[in-house]
Amino acid sequence: MLYKSMVDVIGKTPLVKLRLNIPSAASVYAKLELMNPFGMKDRVAKQTILAAKSSGELRDGIPIIESSSGTMACGVALVGRYLGHPVHIVTDPRIDSITYAKLTSLGCHIHIVTEMGQNGWQSSRLVRLQELMKEYPGAFWPRQYENPENPKAYQELAMELMHDLERIDILVGSVGSGGSLSGTARALKEVHPELRVVAVDATGSVIFGQPDRPTRLQGGIGNSLVAANVEFDVMDDVHWLNDEEAFAATLELAQNEQIFAGNSSGSVYAVARWLAGQISEECNIVAILPDRGDRYTDTVYSDLYHKQNQLSKTCMFSKEPKCVNLDAEVTTWSYAKLMGVHPHEEKTVIR
Image (cartoon, rainbow, N blue to C red; front, side):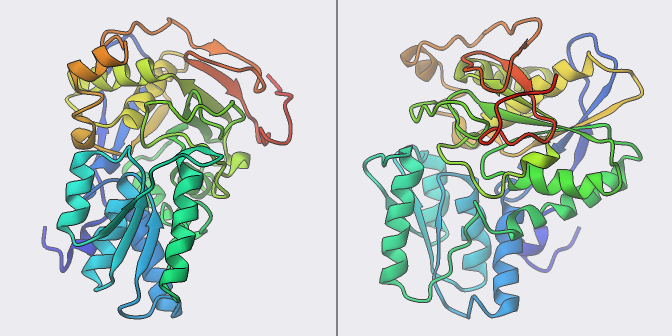
């Protein structure tokens, strides 16, 4: 298929039916967002930057500055550099060598903070970003955590899903900045109002009210801050997986489905696979897989890393994730019902 530019390549990702390796009733379809040029957040970078150029907020040649440790950085690099903008990425020591190589090869300026702030690495990066905004007056900050163009970018993803599937009963997606699941869910619910939306997070992430653990090992999922783009009112349930469970599920995704993905995709896979055994065979589950595995070769896919962090590569999942109240602190695979409840305002869950 012919495209006029690399920006035009973003989107239109494959939807693949998973065969699953356990007895199940429902069908699970994986939306392979990992097959964008760099990953799912290419959509956000494209939508945000093109909207800013269209409105005049982003003028030709003006620097673009964003905080990211992963795929958003690569998306901004792709779109921003292609359109002729200097791109500055503020990140932290967790950035992997592959992502670093991608960014430098595309001509980005990389700024690595050295110490955690009050709210983990994220807050430290935002302090450095503000310093750069003063250094480059008029620079454009995509603000992935609060810019409404982030969830808006996923309206197209929802349209792609509805083009491929006549019926969608459950949507499962990971949450970090909140844009992908919120935007996709809101657009789908306009056509499928009975859609059940299942959020997937990491233990030690504060998004759904858990205590912060900035030293958690998972990347591309969870946060030490609650982004404005997390729309709790469109989500029905949340599942948390710990590092060992997420990594083991990612390895199973590769072994069972031949999908080489990141740990956020692995967590989503584990939840979608479990849900498939809980509902009727007429139901369709869509699992959004955000990121491929190349940036995790030294972590998720490394024997040495597992040994150093005392992680089992053959972690056995509980037969049933534990159902808990939203205010319960969790350390292993658990889930709670949201039903539109904002976990930072209300702690009582209707079961």
